[in-house]
Image (spheres, rainbow, N blue to C red):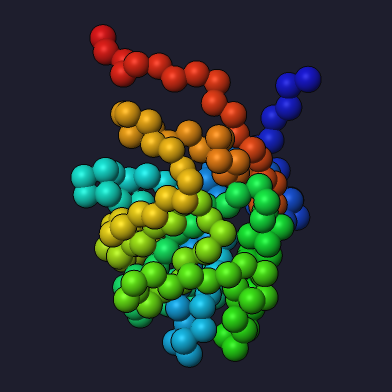
Length: 204
């Protein structure tokens, strides 16, 4: 049965229901844990789903951060240090990863709270997720405010990538489903992906 919901209908819904509904409309999204370091030196972990590839030369990845009043820690940490990490979510620790969506106090070691292990690589001051098979170090490039709703597009340049038992095909393609790396839908749904088919580069 065809259903229609106007913007007026949507604006009158419960806040959580509305957020879940709108988030689901854009379909499957990445799920990655952003690692940063707090001013007091404790590691910070937060799961983000609105992640987008912006370009490959230079390698840029962006994510949407909620308004500062709602989610101040991650963006403040990134702006202060200029570095952060992005870490893939595996089927075996989805529950732990989801716990990082909670609002912890500044005095809490968030990795310890969610049951994942921080890993500090080389001389970098920001934590990676030890359990993640894809780990990226990013340097902050831009924080672009979105005036309409007070959110921010945070853009980082990839500085280094670590892959743990992840195969790269001859053309650079990474088969994420082979490694049981999950994506997300809505506010709290996690999905395992399966490759249907790859096609050659399309030309007229």
